Each structure stands twice: as structure tokens, then as C-alpha cells.
Length: 300
Length: 260
Image (cartoon, rainbow over all chains, first blue to last red; front, side, top):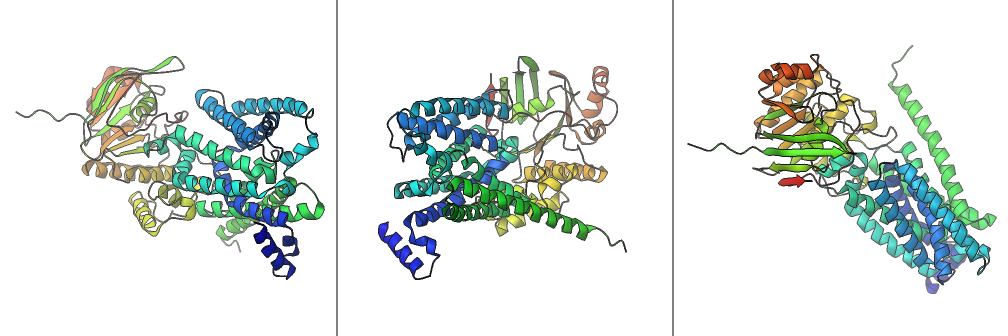
């Protein structure tokens, strides 16, 4: 990878790429955004359609607790993936199982899990401060490009490919199940399978994104791109494409802001995504106003 | 002497409880092939629940046996279908979901597009392909669902109050479509509150009030004293009140099922 970074750095020095690309960590960050945008953007429009925004928030908190568990069990500070994957997966399966077998509303049940994982995470973080300086886990909370390694990038790429392939195979059934579970069932889709399947894909994607975006902010990147896309999309294809574009623009914009103002990457990415959301909100309203004016008969 | 052909669907002692409440009690009747069979009954009689059991979407005690003669394809028009107001899924996207393997977010194939245009013409919605589902009227949405249920041509078409929300013209077109699919060999099972429509369409009526309280030809069955006492005398085209069924727990398509 170092030869690749040197080659990109050379292009930057010769003025063929922006000067920021002289730094390997920024090239790595850009590559992360290139992989993250289609994964999180692609998932985000299904997350919103399936009304799983709160679910994603609970998963972000669970990741924080997973980090604490991983570190307490002796995982390295820069890659506590075992704890994160393990605890997030258990939380995901627990949330879906209880949701399917309880008569309580889903947001109430997810709220219970949200509170449980947060409470456990806080207790474990206090325990953790006896072993580590709590600032050392800041990068997991808020995301940091400086701590992203080539290993993280490769893991992100591998998970991204797996998630994309699996998602493509089940996409139509997932969308139909989101619109009408009885119709999806008649079409041969297993609603329970689809619910667990999508929740697990979402968990995998969130966990591998944490080093860049951070546990507290990753939920925003699986929500805001789709929310922005909804403001302007006219059809499923545009909904998907705009979600990916917004995720990519937010990623690149956030990276630029993060490196120039020396603020956490996750925060900068989410701010950029939110700015795009309000921009699309205004564009959407303007377009609708023009559309309704065009439909009105001439009064004059 | 020839033995009569077996029915397409047999309900044998079907009972169903939800939250300890008995919603269906020992329901036994059969549905003959290539007929329009209408299930009527007051609100809360268990009509939608019975369809959920037939579709494999609710656990039950007893047996439901299907004697398929052809593909075993099932078409279904649900009672409730709510669409989020800001969801940018068009009519074409929705109908393409089960008609192409390519994820709809990558686009709709030209062949699928043609097939959808034909389907929409069949239900009187030509030209509505690019309209978002969220802006359709209740009647238009019902017809989109009917179009969805008609392709591929089902051996069994199940409709839960298909006339709800339709205007006179829409009802007329619906009845014509049902007559056409029956003539093409499809068996239609339908829940309806519109007794005039039932008299016009039904080859056979089952009156349900958690258990079967009458079955036979429409005019005679609906004229029975205990049935007239149970059913409202007026026409209720907007019926369809009530909450949607809970999500399915099992696959719909199987030759014979029994629950417990």
C-alpha cells in the first residue's frame, strides 16, 4: 500500500490531485469514503423505508459497549472488532427476536435495548479508565482518520463487497416486505428471515464504519443520506442514487473540514450530511411549489 | 357414474385464537374450483383472519387443504395497504419488485416495463406508471394491488374487500376483471360487505360469524332469517374498517397445511 500512497502523493505534488493527497492518512480516508458511501448510502434508504432509524441509533450505542468489552477482554486499542462485532450481533439478534415476539410497539422495545446498552457501556467505560486513558477511546466514539489503518480499510472493503452482494440478491424482497409484509409473504419472501438478514447486514456495516465515523455518529450516516434523497427523489432508482451521492458528498466534505479545522471526522461528516439535508429540503420544497404552480390553470 | 371433482380448498375444523380470544371456531367448508366464492359476515366475524390462515400468515388448529390443478399460484389483494407520504416508490417500481430479478433501485428492465403497462391497462390505470404510490387515491391503489395480484395468472385469487374505496366505474371494472379471470380458470375467494355486489358476482357465499352459519347460493343464503338478522341490510361499499393483519409468520404457498 505504501507504494500506492507514494504514487498518489507524487500526483498531488505535481498538481494533478489536490495537495491534501500528499498525506497517506488522507488518501486512506478518501478510500474509506469511496467504500462507505455506497454501503451506508445504499443501506440508508432501506433503513428509512423499513423504519429502522432508532434501531441504528441503538446499534451505535451497542458498539460503544462492545468496544469497552473488547478492550477489557484484552483486544488491541486500535482494533477491538471482536468485542464490537460480538456485542452488536447479540444486541441485534436480541432486538429483532423480542420485537417479533412481543406485542409492545417496536420503538418502545428498541428504547429498552438502547437504555440497557448505554447503561452497560457507561459502567464498563468507568472500569476501562482504570486501564486506559479514556481519551484513547475517543476515536471510537467520534471517529478519527488518524487511527484508520490499512487493515481497517481492507476489512471495510471486504465487508462492503459481502454486504453489497447479499443486498443485491434480496433487495426486491426487502423493499416489498417493507411496503407490505403480507404481499411479500405471498410472493414467497420469509418476513422473519428478511428482518434478521437486514439487521445483520446493517450491524456489519455499522461496525466496520466506526473507525471513520465514530460510534455516536454512525447512526446519522445511515439516516441522513436517505432523508436527504427523499426530499428530491422521484422513484426508487433516484432514491438509491441520491442516497449514495449524499453519503459520498458528506464523506468527502467532512474529510476536508476535519483536516482543515482539526475536528473529529465523524462530527464533520455528519455536519456536512446535515447541511446537504437542509439544502435538499429547500430544493424539494421549491420544486413542489413550481410543480403545483404549473398544474394550476391560468387565472388571468 | 362419475365422482365429483374435489374442491380446490377445504377448511376442516379450523380454529384460531389470538391473545386467548377465539377468533375462529371449528370452521369447516370448501371452495369449488373456477368459482367466485364470497365470505360475508359482520365486523369482527373473522373474515380477514380466515384469509390470513389460508395464506399461511396466522397459526391455526385444524386443516386447510389445497387440491391444486395447475400452477398453485396465489394472487392476493390485502384489506390494508398504507404508504408513507414521502416514499418515492412509483407504481412501476412497486409492480417491478416481483417481476424482475434486477434490484429495482438499479432501474426497471424494458421487458418488465412493457408487462407492467399491459397490466395497468387491464385494470384501467394506463399511464400511471411514474406516479408515486403515495399520491394515488384509495381506489387507484386498490386497482394497482389488483394488477399486482393478476400477474402471473393465479390459480387462486384472494381479495379482502376489493371494492372498498372504488367508485361506481371502478366497481364495474373490478367485477368485469373478476368475471374474466374466473372464465380463464381462476378460483376467486373474496371478502365483501357489499351485499348487492355479492348477489351479482358470487357463485357461492359463506356466512361467517367466527364459525360458519350458512353456505350456498348467494340469493338463497342471504335471504335466510338468521343471516338477515346478522348482516346489515344496506350496502357498505366503503367497509374495510379495522386494523391490518399482523405480519405473516409463514409462507403462503403450499399444497396443504395444518396448524395447531
